[in-house]
Amino acid sequence: MWAPGEEVAKLTYFGLYALQHRGQESAGIAVSNGSQILVFKDMGLVSQVFDETSLGSLRGHIAVGHARYSTTGASVWENAQPTFRATGHGSIALGHNGNLVNTAELAELVAAQSTESSGRATRVAATNDTDLVTALLAGQTDEDGRPLTVEQAAPVVLPQVKGAFSFVFMDEHTLYAARDAQGVRPLVLGRLERGWVVASETSALDIVGASFIREVEPGEMIAVDEEGLRSTRFAEAKPKGCVFEYVYLARPDTDIAGRNVYLSRVEMGRKLAAEAPADADLVIATPESGTPAAIGYAEASGIPYGSGLVKNSYVGRTFIQPSQTIRQLGIRLKLNPLKEVISGKRLVVVDDSIVRGNTQRALVRMLREAGAAEVHVRISSPPIKWPCFFGIDFATRAELIANGLTVDEIGKSLGADSLAYISIDGMTEATTIPKSQLCRACFDGEYPMPLPDPELLGKHLREPDAAGGRHGTEQPSVPDVDGVGTLTAGVGGTDALRRP
Image (cartoon, rainbow, N blue to C red; front, side, top):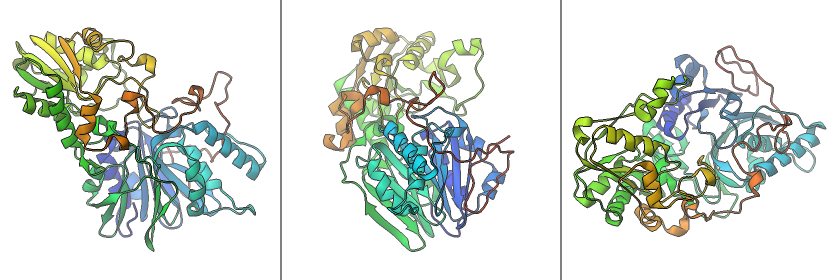
């Protein structure tokens, strides 16, 4: 966000609230007042990390915020974002939505860059791919060894970054945003009365009162400062947006590539009803991700739609481990059946996807215990058979229930009377986006870009190995800071502090 005269930290905070569904492990905000960058981040939900005191300390006119869902690197404070690095001209803070596939290669580039500048490669606690990109942007030099500015470094670094990425980053004076050539993850540009906003979804623009202008194009970098907005291209656009955004990941009130997500999900339900009818008394959803598709299924089938499950909206990620008794109750902490609604009924239960099958298995059992006469499970996406390397932490192929089992066998495993999925073409048609412009790799195994060898992929690629080192090479560090619950900053910025 770039907005002189606005409380950018608070606006960013509410924008992150709107995007909390995209990441619930840690949250952070970086702010610049024109002379220094200040970062505050911690583990937990946005509401747990920030309060009036911390937001009041983040003063400036440029801000970058992030809510993390880990796909490379463990879920620890050191990997929380925005990442921070000192540069030859000041500092940089960066947030990343997506996942890179050439992390090992980038680690080698950072090590070489570090060795050239200091004579030795030093170690840092972060093990995510985001910090590597931040280090590369911070450490670029020209032929004479003079440091490049962030804006000069970006056209050099971004073409070397492979995978899915929507970056928002900043130096002391300028806000930047960049999207990979395939545009796998969404990124949109909005206008405030006195500034500009870049966000992962249009719903975040709505929350902060920004008007939608356009999407950041695949392969495009934009920069915003006191001189206005400017755009450059670092790669040729080859659109391959993630279809799973329409199925599950994005908020239903978001628009992607001109198509509303809610309408796409309702249409998936309609097509699912046509492809996989069921003789039943009531259609219910697995709230809330299955609700739009369940509404579409009920509309197309003529079977009444009802609320058969109650969701506890106040259950988020928790650091308190459940007791054995609670653990045995499975998903009842979040979902509980309305016995009076479902008892004696033949149910169609609509959900958005099945990964391992554990949730659906517990759900079917719960519905039968509540008196359901029949349980017919309908899924508004095809069977997931391939892992995602572009920002969704799907299991390995061996863990995916759709590998090695037929649909009927999966249904029996869940304890359902029947199971059916939407076809891949039906799902695609519901988005109204051409097949050629969608990544459907988790369903069909056709990845939108070349992948490295399997040993160079994976969430824990850069975690310490058995010998105590890291996979790949080490990268230069920024000073470790042990916080006491306050924010400090010097000229040029500081890294984030922890809460006590």
